Each structure stands twice: as structure tokens, then as C-alpha cells.
Length: 302
Image (tube, rainbow, N blue to C red):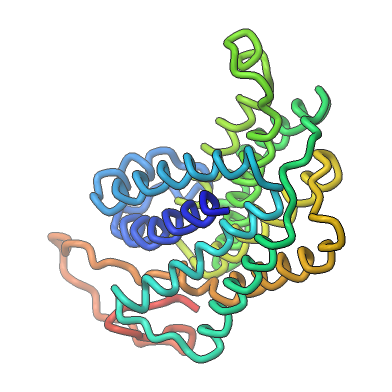
């Protein structure tokens, strides 16, 4: 469980850094799958630092997935929003309301229950159909990014966020479907390519979701996508189980951690970073609308 919690810390801090850097990058085509946006984003040092934390978090996630049920790892990764909330309160001066501290407590309590109740990873490694199905799911997530990018407002952010979560969920399942590391076994396993395509799709869609629209909606969609569906696959297809007699406690812990994470979804939200002025005349500032709040000098989309 320590590996899963370490991954949550890395991902939580990376979310803040990447959201700031992505908003600072020049906008692209608006497509949900825009590799050029990644090229522009990596020119920001904060995005690169976020990627380094993501890499460390992914390594810890791999360790966790080889020893814990998917539902426990997924809930721990959703807890990265609690890390983001606490980081924002310390580094960005964001003030947490009482209910948000309660949500942090719910996440921590839920993870404690999961840690006590979860058994080891299930003994199932899936059949050929599940491996190819995982690859097909990864390709479908990637293909869905383009039409999702043509949506507007909160719908665009929510759908892209959900797609990114499903992509990361494919990674969680695919790790469990890799059961041999010899070259002849590894490179003929569709799960390896599902892992690569799913991870790439998740990053592309999440980066695009952060670049425009409500990051709160995107983060909530991501949390749902990367927890619920992989957990079901783990229980139904890979035989993930709890300790004897601890099933209700595991369900309660999973629900508490997920609900707390969703309550903290706004802490994926980072205000836009001002860009250098263009050579042309500066247009007059638009009046603030009721859907915009100002906190610690930053503008946040509701």
C-alpha cells in the first residue's frame, strides 16, 4: 500500500504543475488529441517537472499493481486529489473550507479501510480475449478524443477527463495482464501495447482537457474513469478479493475514498497564467461573470 500512496503523492503534485504549465502554453487546434500541444507544453519547466513526478508515480504504481487488488490501487490514485488540495493550500494560498478538510479526512479514512481489508492481487491473469479487448479499449479511447475535443465548455472537459481516466484505467488492467517478461512473451502480448496506447491516450486527453475548459470537470471525470471500471474488471475477471469477512469494509472504504476525491475535484483547477502581450492593441478587459471566482490572485472556472 505504501507504493500506491507514494504514487498518489507524485501524481497529486504533478497535477498542479502540469495544469499551470498547460494553461501557459499557446492554444492549439482545440482537438482532444493534439500532440503539438504536448510539444508546446514541454517547453514549460513546470510541465517537465510534472512529467518527472508522473514517471516516478508510474513506477510506484507498477509495483503496487503487482501486489495489490486493482480497486485498492485505483482508490489510492484517486487520493492524489487530496494531495493536490493540501499542496494548493500550502503553496498557492488556497483556503480549504471545513467540508473540504472533511473530504480529505474521508479519503484518508477510506484508504485506511482499504489497506486493512484488501487481500493480495487476484490469481487470475485474464485470457486472450481480455488482452485483445484491453487493446481495443485503449484504441477506442484514443479515437474518441478527436470528436470529444469538438465539444464545448464543461461537457468538453468532462468527456476528455473521463476518456483520460479510462486510458489510465486500461494501463492498470494491462499491467496485471502482463504475466511474462521474456522478449518472446512480452512483445507478443497485446496487453503491452494496450498499456502504451492507453497511457498515451490518457496523457493526450488530459492535457487537452486542462488546456481549455473547467479542470474541475476534467478531474472529476478522470477520477471516475480510472477507478470504477478497472475495479470492476479486477473483481469480475481477475478475481481480486478482500480478506475474509472484510468485504463490506472494503466497499465502504472504496466509496469513501472515491466520494472524498470527487468532492476535492476543484483542486485540479488552476487559473490561467498570463501570456506576454501581443504586438497589437490590448482589448479591454471583459467584466467578471458570476461563474468566475477570484482566489489568491488567480481566476478559476467553476
